[in-house]
Amino acid sequence: MEPMLEKYACKEYLQALDLMKKHCDYNRDTIPQQKDISNFLKSRTSFRMRPVAGLLSSRNFLNGLAFRTFFCTQYIRHHSSPLYTPEPDICHELLGHAPMFANRDFCDFSQEIGLASLGASDEEIDKLARCYWFSVEFGLCRDGDNDQIKAYGAGLLSSFGELEYACGELNDGVEIPKIEPWDPYRASMQDFPITTYQPLYFLADSLQDAKIKMREYCEDLKRPFFAQYNFQTQTAFIDRPVKRRDITAV
Image (tube, rainbow, N blue to C red; front, side, top):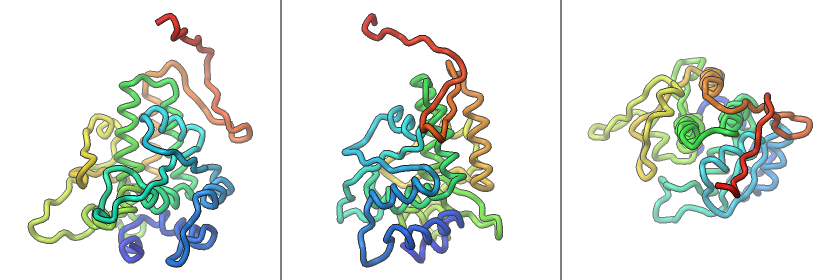
């Protein structure tokens, strides 16, 4: 993967990957431990990785991001399908997601989606999940130095097959994916496949551009309250009083 990442990964990922090699035993001779990675991320960006036994609902998963917590799977893809897995596995989590969580801008971007999910309707959760998919999982951005297309989404960074498909020069006969400018309003309405390479990717001018546009989208959502995060207490607070619904009476 390293030659592919050097060629197609965004600079923020490559900088973070160097840190992971230094502090988290990312090398060819050892197996990185999730606890060590989580402790390092927490010391650097206040993000942490929490292991789970399987897939969570979109609401529960996104709610975790609001508290700078990433729910991380622990199983590994089958050896018969090394190029791609429709479900996230430990390779995807540690190679794709973990290094990006060492970048504060990316962490803030991810938390924006999480905070917007608190109190959101089911319809809005679906829209936020699509935005997450097309950014945190399969986002592209421009390299500020040479304007090349680079990957920052974990689904690309953990798959050398799809990484080259999305960012590389394709051979004759291979269908070329469609690339559109990053627009959360557009992404929130876009369906996507989970068993094949993506036919569509969204391209941000930079990670900062992706974060600003996502924040604007989240602020425009119709929600019963807006949540903010307190770093000292590691809790979320809301901007207005709310009345709890008695679900036992429903």
